[in-house]
Length: 245
Ligand code: NAD
Image 1 (cartoon, rainbow, N blue to C red):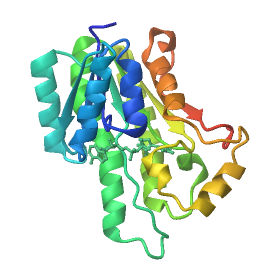
Image 2 (image 1 turned 180 degrees about the horizontal axis):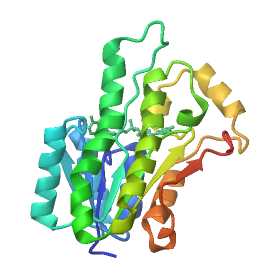
Image 3 (image 1 turned 180 degrees about the vertical axis):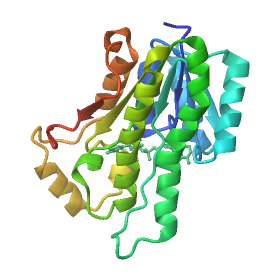
């Protein structure tokens, strides 16, 4: 397992950072970020201080060219990619009556097209290997909707469709593709929510508290493991019971 190569987009902080730390126990980890390079460096140092191996790269997942360039570099250096975790994501909230076209375009470009860009770049590599695991990070709101998040909800619902379509296409090549749909998790993304919204959200969670990044990381690690070899095209909900299928 230690020779496995994992790529975690947006692995510099929040949920991605925690996924990277968790995977570093079993694989070499490459984390990516778009801004705040110092956060990526800190995550790499933290992994190394625990005896793991990690590298950081900076590029924008919404750019097809930059994503292709990144994976070319990875192949030149490491020769393979076993795990891809499409975690990079942004929110630009606003009610539909006020939402600007740019806010729609930006969120769809990073969250949905960014996921496509990475899968597109890695699919041929994994097909050649005859092995690969892809986990896409969606969201509970893809299933429930959310006020003020038409762009974000659409991008995260799109990720579910993308997951199922690609899972069917790549299954025969030894590649599984799954999604994890987190509920409300304590990270920078949710820290900026107004107190009133946080209180309301909390009242909707049967387990009575927000999730931690570790709650997502453990499920991602399971989906990447051999224990999950017969699971593909699925969505795993990790939300404290806030949404039940
Ligand atoms: P975060 O804001 O703390 O981290 C986001 C990461 O994505 C950062 O590392 C950032 O550098 C990277 N990123 C952003 N834009 C990028 C781009 N254009 N190119 C490359 N990297 C880019 O967010 P988080 O809360 O840790 O969320 C991680 C993922 O989980 C996101 O996809 C988010 O939508 C999803 N999610 C989060 C929650 C939650 O409650 N926090 C709930 C459901 C889903």
